[in-house]
Length: 320
Image (spheres, rainbow, N blue to C red):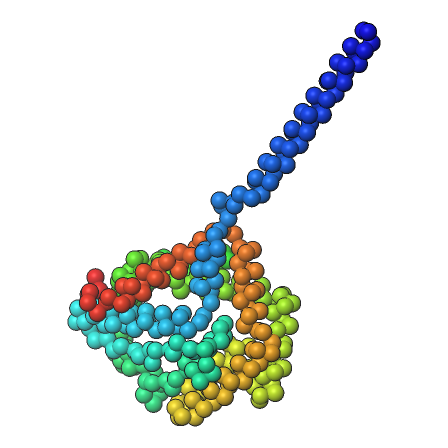
């Protein structure tokens, strides 16, 4: 009888132990599943990645934004200099880039839009009137003029970039006042210029060792050779057209050449998938970047939207 009682006690203890371990294992499995299903609050959002990619990508929207900001800065610089009693000639940014324009990063909606390259203006030498005027000034007067426009040489600040390099920018003069008005601060204006350039430099280094991009680029190059082009990249192709425009080629000849090249580029991109591969590798590159870099790129996106809003209003509000 005593032996049976001890056996029953042992059996109950064993059963309780099994239940206890099962409960622990269920808890561990549930906790692990719960942890995996919860998003990491520190992970950048999809919107952050999207905005970072937009800042690094040159497309029709980017070109049109740059065109608007350049025109606004020119007009505001002129107003500021005139208040100081100084002459300032606005440099033309040319016609607004068409919405369907093709860039090195993105195919446009139509080959007829080309790359938005137009003949350069600026007289026989191609030099803008503003530059010719400043160069014509006597040395002492030119120095005073440049100081009024760009500020004293000792008024500068540095900007540490994501790569660790440093950029330097002027903080005085009419140009700085214009930048502060549009962007909120001179530093923010140079963030918009220097940070995308710096990160794109890192991305270029990444692509140099990326097999998928290298394969697509090689296919595009071989295809373009069949159309008579020796350009190594779409960016080099567009640069060659700009050099042609700088030589004051007739508008009709430039337009014909640009359309023919854009048609060939479009066909070769379809065969190689070059620009689609570029976008995919850019996304992969951004996924490897620390949150600080993505946040900084998103910050550039935000300040650019602010600058565009102020640029649209600048005809009604004076530069302060």
